[in-house]
Image (cartoon, rainbow, N blue to C red):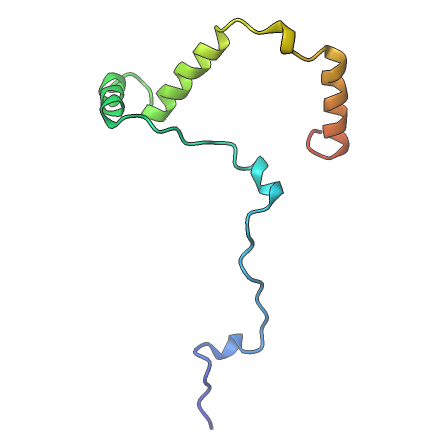
Length: 99
């Protein structure tokens, strides 16, 4: 009996697909971005949130930024009309992004 050259004989002859590269549909799953802040500020925030209930500096920063955005007056000139919003929602439903 000859020794097989393949280290895993059971896999001989099987076809494998190459790893998939990131495509445009993957962007909807990638819904986070990184923001760099100075290390001393990060360390100060870490000390500030100690025993505060926040799980991480990131959670605290997201909380603060959401609060800032929520309390910022909206620029009504650039907002979409309700009719435009409904048209966009319908298009997204037709494309399968909304149910």
